[in-house]
Length: 378
Image 1 (cartoon, rainbow, N blue to C red):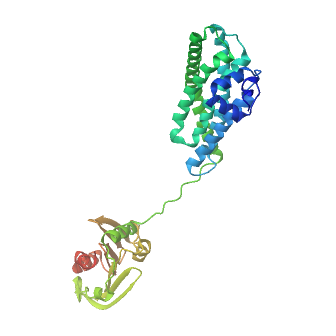
Image 2 (image 1 turned 180 degrees about the horizontal axis):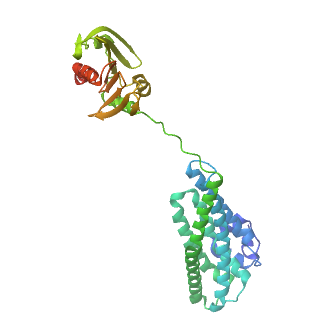
């Protein structure tokens, strides 16, 4: 744009007008005063408001970190639309207020000129909407935009709507419009704000009714035995397993109630070393196992191997589990059998067979779990 165009009333583009009113307001107000007062809502205010609304919407979606069609996303879109509506409405109210107040300060009432003054003075606020792309500074930029808008209003009063005694009346005129703006903002906050919140809640409820949010992913359910194995393996299990043959040495020749050792087998795989012994007495058999597990054992697979039943009654008896002093105990009693499992610090012992629960406990206590923990735990 040429220097002459600053005063001839030639209309420049949207971005150029916004730029010029922000960086050289005095000369721009003179140019505006030379223009015919045409409606500016559609050609100036609305485009700037839409740009700010789109920037705010895009920024809110990007900073959310996920794009998902839900109540929150729809409300962000509605908020952007409301921003545009309120921006246009506020500029119209400002133009009406300027036109009503002007005669009190010796200016001629002119709705077209009042509209120009309101539209161009609102530029800093409309442009400040772009600060939504940087949320940490949005509030500061918008606040600065409001202050600069009133500065622009003061600079534009005399060129666009000349008042009598400008030295005194321009500040008073500006302060009058500031007062009107405060009243309008307070009214919006008091009456419109609650309506918007109610509408937001209703919209969220409607969207959730039509398209309810997906259920949260099911959390894996672990057994008490698996939890105990996981905890004890990380805290007390060794990194390196011993030779399973060394576990064989821990089985005594006899156990209480007259049980005599018949055979022993041992193996090592899957993060465990295991030795199994068979004890017999007249009319009864007892299977006894000593298992050492490492800190990289699979808790789920190991818990499955131990086959510990959940608490509750079963055929002819019951199943019961409990934790005492960091160890996990499982009892399973049937009509003619018993099974006793103790998960200790790096070591598991199992006693089971056609025996009583007292006989199973006595077998484990005879060998001594604490002693095995000291030898084979960490």
